[in-house]
Length: 117
Image 1 (cartoon, rainbow, N blue to C red):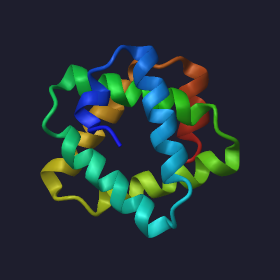
Image 2 (tube, rainbow, N blue to C red):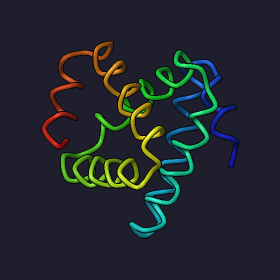
Image 3 (spheres, rainbow, N blue to C red):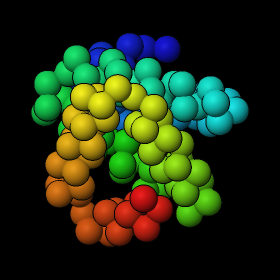
């Protein structure tokens, strides 16, 4: 698997392709492994600047919005659980980046994702 910081710096098309592969791998794991992977991704992304972090969040929210409601509900729950298990400074920055991303996303995507938060 490629390093998340490398993926985050790719062009939007390549980044989406790489993240779809990563999500496909992750969805094969049990919930504990998924949470661990998500925590690892968030921790690594803390090394990125805000623009790169928001770029990755934008890609991921776009991918997530294409999931079925059941899949999206499960993904959001795992994503929130992973965030809640991080140190406070990482939690805060992660939530700040998610909020900044939500402001840039189409309203339809925001509404679909928000109903599971």
